[in-house]
Length: 152
Image (cartoon, rainbow, N blue to C red; front, side, top):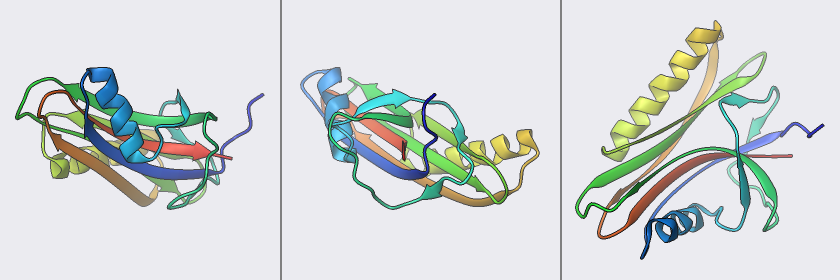
């Protein structure tokens, strides 16, 4: 059985690259998580998990993360990715991710509403909401990423 993460941090980044994969890798580096092996998880924040602005994760670690990303090869296009984490007073929380062809502020608003909807669907009370987003105007090959990184 895998251990349950106890900490969460929000990160976001954007970048260009010579190929879509390089742009994605550079966005990961921009967000500070480019040297981790991310294990994509879905939408539940473990009970008792606390938010920390930053914590070290050794390079190469198998790291659970909920993330949204978007790649574009269309010069001039604005792309954005956002992550939202909702904390519940008595139980588990909810993580939502959003990506779209829109400004950063719209991505933030959309993901915040998604977290609120996730709490409503579960009949839970939202105690605290944290949102982080990144946007990028594509030059050649662009990428944006926003993630909730979980750790032990």
